Image (cartoon, rainbow, N blue to C red; front, side, top):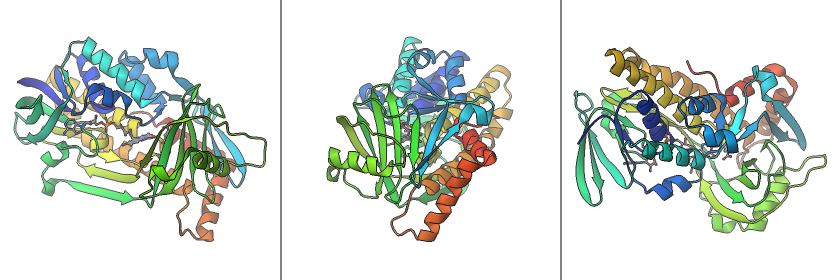
Length: 391
Ligand code: FAD
Ligand code: DHB
């Protein structure tokens, strides 16, 4: 079995790359270890940057997003029992974000891929990528109980943080930068309309809380919890009480409660692997970098990577030139490190550590006050949140 571009992983990065390559007439095969239902229902990100929305529209994947997605013009920051709204279009010259769940985006991309007749294999697990420094890299994978080999001209690892493609880059050529955080998020879905029109990021001395949504009738809520928290220790009432306590302000505000339909704990980590290309093997999305979720950057970075990569592969197949492939890693890493910094900034400004000193809390509040008082400070947040333009 042979293809031009072997794509490992059918998450947002792999599926969108396949779509973009299809539009350029480049053949590819997507291997996804899970089954279709699992991939379509894995609850993850929900916020699309302006640039992500633009890319999805341009490749014909934006139809349902434009019908069902919710355009948001800002977010609210809460701290010290006060609320402050950031107006994104006013601060960024017109940029906004879209609330559209990763689950829905993945469903749309899978349907397009299967509809185009391009190969997308579920329950196909890559076990090894070999020959990165040859002209014929290959993927060994298992499918329906049998072992197969896919030979390729290029292999792209879109296989997420726990993927295998990274290992095709030899240790001596690879460097990993990492940071762990002493807290996790307890994330829940609730069958209740969101209590506010926009997202609320709340700093409190009880810890961080985030009020998001999936649709006009489904809320998505997060609480900072200690690492190792068992969701079973958080009955529904305790979750609602804590969300209410962390969002309390000295102004009228009521948190509507409803039945919780999902509950899970997500650890937080920052990690970057460099370079994102070795020979004919390339990494994109979570396979190369992860961020703590506070800035809503993970999915958007994955989209940016594959947008850059699709252009580079189109150049290679149309003209033979490898210039854009050669600069792929450096181009992506500039944006990746900006997003790493922003995600770290949002996370450490809004979360409180268990043994945090009152001095550190005062610094956080000073930073939040600065965001509320200064157009420069809030524009810096708004530009990063809505997404910097692709290079
Ligand atoms: P993934 O979505 O991880 O896709 C990788 C795919 O590769 C998966 O489908 C996996 O099954 C497949 N795969 C792995 N190994 C193999 C193999 N050996 N062979 C074949 N296939 C393989 N971001 C936010 O902005 N906000 C959030 O609230 C948020 N919540 C998150 C919650 C969780 C639990 C996680 C893990 C991430 C969250 N993220 C969030 C980050 C965001 O979802 C990711 O950045 C995004 O999914 C990255 O897309 P990707 O395609 O690079 O990787
Ligand atoms: C969501 C997740 C985030 O990490 C974030 O910053 C905003 C929204 C969400 O899942 O809706």
